[in-house]
Image (tube, rainbow, N blue to C red; front, side, top):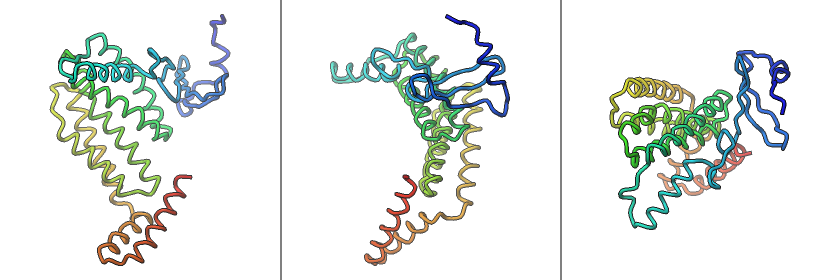
Length: 252
């Protein structure tokens, strides 16, 4: 086994403006690499970022969710189901590597995968919130929930904007703002900071969306609503056909 990676590092000099690349691995799959000052990190683009599987499951979250479902089927209820401290630590460790990956995915504009990874970590929050046996464990993860939700919502809104679905983007951002505003407070500096910062970013993004001119697709949808309200069904049918055509173009 060759342990020296000097040649690899020399072939990709550190450049703070050129730290990320997606390359093809030996088996043909694509992997995400990040050049750090003293090394290179590599993440799988799909599945767990480290490429591991656990008892045939893609990730530890999937494994625990399956155990929860089995418990419910056996007992008829989820009462007394608990996430132990050891299970929490494994969930927390998994959440961290998903966090590292979705930060990079967001930066390179891969919003579909950002949504997938942030949704994974939001599900960890939900599981811990409901079943963790330790309140200390709960707070350790839930204090970052505003930030995770913010990243999830902005990535999802960006997808809608790229599809010219301004109204959908607006709804996504407004829903995230409302959810963060209604989150039970956690008495940690991280939660208070992330809550304020996330609301600020979401409101700023929403303001930018609202100030954009209405997209052609949104204009057609507004016209469709008016045609239906006026019972002009012939015009409504024409508008629906135009909307379908535009949507198909954006799916290509």
